Image (cartoon, rainbow, N blue to C red; front, top):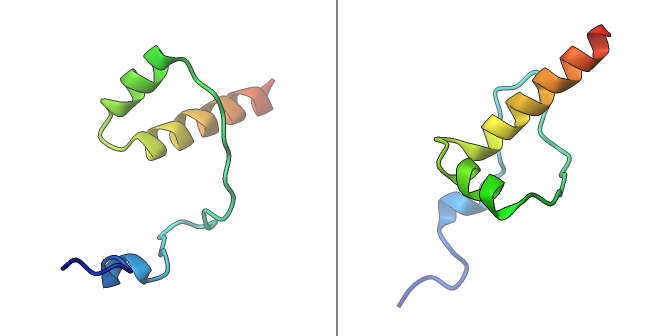
Length: 62
């Protein structure tokens, strides 16, 4: 019978090697086509973070 509380490794706190921790959440709506294309990426969350950061950096330079 499977463990109803999940796998023990999933209960450990999330660790990150980043300068600034990933502590906030952001929800946004995208088109079905965008979601399908994002799901083909190796690491969709990291891809989104990188693209958003690039856009913010570009906007800051203006």
